[in-house]
Amino acid sequence: QVQLVESGGGSVQAGGSTRLSCAASGYTHSTYGMAWFRQARGKEREGVAAIYTGDGSTYYSDSVKGRFTISHDNAKNTLYLQMNSLKPEDTAMYFCAADPGPTIKYMGWTNVRIYNYWGQGTQVTVSS
Image 1 (cartoon, rainbow, N blue to C red):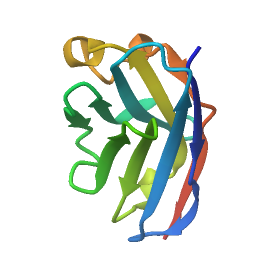
Image 2: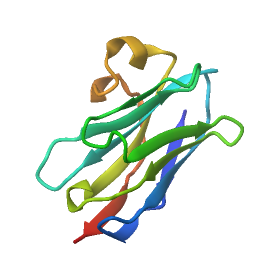
Image 3: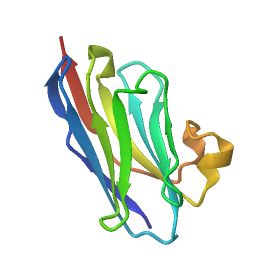
């Protein structure tokens, strides 16, 4: 059973930066599609960024492209999200998600239904 634990959230001023981490344990496959989703109050969960650990392919939503960077440390089994130039509209609960194998490359990485494992989330609040 894969377990995901996010950390690094908090309060940040607009224009600032922060980095989220997602520590994974219990891996049963050699490669995973891993992603960050976010959910603002009263809104649906939306994909922010994803990475396929097999070849390092990355995917971003238009709203964060050029500002956020997703990465994965295979040795530490940890997923990161570097968030720069933060805006108040980035305020949300951020969730880490994982799915075994390369499914995200073919089924659409923003589809919440393809991810088998989810973390509990970490809150990011950006103030203007």
